[in-house]
Image (cartoon, rainbow, N blue to C red; front, side):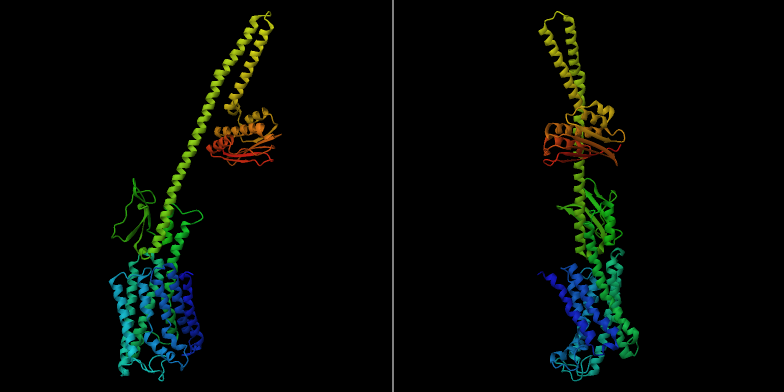
Amino acid sequence: MPVARLRPLLLAPVVLMALAIVTLAKRPPFAEAPLDYLFDASTGVVLVVAGLVTWARRPSAWTGPLIVLAGYLWYVGSLYVILPDRPANELLARLPFLGFALRGYYDPILAFVILTFPGDRLETRRDRLAIGALLALMLAHSAWRLIGVRPGIGPGNPPDAPANPLFLITDTGTFVTGDEILTAAVGAALVLVAVVVLLRRRRIRPGARRATDPVLIGGAIWAGLAGLYGIGAYTHEVLRVDIVPWEGPGWTAQYLLRMLGPLGLLVGAIRVRGSSAAAIALMAGPDGPPRGIDMERTLRRTLDDPGLQLLQFGPGTGWLDSTGRASALPAPDADRATTLLERDGTPIGAIVHDVTLLDDPALVRTVAAAVALAMDNERLQGDLHAQLEEVRASRARIVEAGDLERRRMERDLHDGAQQRLVALAVSLRTIRSRLGPDVAPPVISELEAAGDLVKAAIDEVRELARGLDPSILREAGLGAAVQSLADHSSIPVTVAIDLHGRLPARAETAAYFVAAEALANAAKHSEASAVTVTATQAAGLLSLEVADDGGGGADLEGSGIRGLADRIAAVGGTFAVDSPLGAGTRIRVSIPCAS
């Protein structure tokens, strides 16, 4: 089982600890301070949840595990509230002492996370000094308590507790004074952290604050309030001045305010993760990824960066913005960052975005990969569309050239061979009349046979010319032309054509040749007893259907069917044949005919 699937189990111990605090608390009992216990018990759970979300979002970063660790450390100082009054086990009896000495280490961890979110590095020397000072003071404070706490000092550490094996400071007053000073120093360091957090927020551009504001604002409130209570403990005990409430609603409210830090981490982690998920969902939407300026607008919304630009690069054009105007990449020291989009090491585009997005490199990589893929798809679709248009245009040119050639042949036959045959028939009749009545019968038979042959040849030439370019189609339209085909068919043909006047020539010609080929095939191959031809016109489309009751089984790969399919495709139409064995053949075509 992958380790990542086991991470949610890390939530179980803190949930059990929170339940134990709520149900077993004795110092004081839960009924005396229910809200205090509820806020305190739930804070660690919120931290672990935030850590797990961040960990899942960026598995290779330290941020998620650190937040989970902070959630566990949250309960170190609260162990005494669930222990029995006099534990029989010596180790359990020492837990309150250790909890008192080592409490609070979630503070430097949370400070580090807040000052690095959404990355995992401290950016400035000021940030590093603030974290370093806080951690150093925490270690000094813990060391002072480890060597100075005796039984009877600290919560849950009664006078009859086991002796401190590290005890070195024998004077209680010295220890208490030092503890108060170190507590105030840690508090001051936390106030410094709050100030540095607010200064960091000022460096972040508005476009990136959607994810960082909950963390930074909540973190500043948490650190500032925790710091004030650390300083307030000193002023309360030494100066007898209260700068923060120590009882009543104000004391309870500080628990709620301190939760803003963990809650901010949770909200920020969810928002960062949501941005990446939104980018992926965007590119895999039902209508595909957006294009051009729509993609730029969507990326601005997705990444919450109103100034984001999506640029495209071409060897002959250079950098162009989403509107097609010449553009340029920002300078390296500008407040905008550039993420290049590449294909095989060659730039195809760039995303110009807020520099703070680089704090989340996984998000930038995800978006860059998705946008590069979308741009590649757009380019490939454009190339494919251009190729398809060229194929359609080429096919249309071939069909048109074929039609022109047929019309030329029809004219040549009509003006050439047909006229010569007619002239020959006239010449034969003239010869017969000039020979007179005394011509031998065999000669007369030969002349009549020659005349019949010439007449048959004329009919065949006329039929051939009619098939090449039926003049009736040009003169009277599709309905009359199809009816003429039906009248000359050897099979009974029913024609039902309902059209709104004449159609574009290309549509009429394509439909006519489908009907002609279908009727010819039915007569030659189908053994049909009846054929029906129907044609309707609606919504800019001509729908033609030719159906027979023959044996079916038409050769769908034959040159005739394939030629019809090519002809219909050349005019942008659709062509379908249904010819099951024993159930006849049905040809359906749909041809655009809007003028």
